[in-house]
Amino acid sequence: MFASKQTGFFYDPAFNDDIPKGAVEISAEAHAELLAGQGAGQVIGWGDDGYPRLEVAPAPSAEQLATVERAWRDVQLAGTDSVVARHRDELEEVSKTSLTAEQYAELQAYRRKLRDWPEGAQFPLKDHRPIAPPWLAESLQ
Picture 1 (cartoon, rainbow, N blue to C red):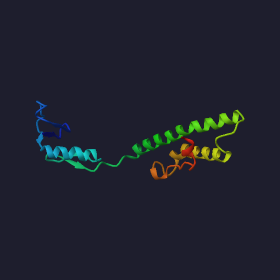
Picture 2 (cartoon, rainbow, N blue to C red):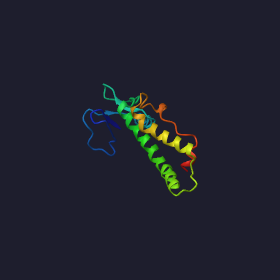
Picture 3 (cartoon, helix red, strand yellow):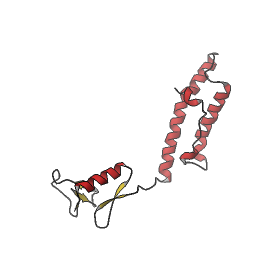
Picture 4 (cartoon, rainbow, N blue to C red):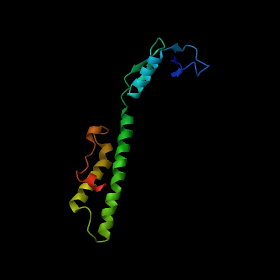
């Protein structure tokens, strides 16, 4: 097995006729260890000698974290849309509502916190996500 720092790829001479100049030979065991480490969250880096090595993956940037947290927030809002719509429909029909007035107010407060969260000082820290009312999970089923 060969590894090329220039291309960042591995080449097996049994399948690859064109192995880049400067590629270094590594054992099958070393290749397997690199792939296993990559599967466990590490990244493959390259030494000055051209040999691949496992490295700690860099922490995500603030922009990447914000993108992930906005996506999470959007899923939470979309997931509660049906609960809001059902409650409003029940009110319009003047029938018994699935939520109490207090629960509906809690739900709308939670949704407001979700919308406002990206402007908060703790955004995009996952540990500071708005917390759903405890009864909400049951209503979403």
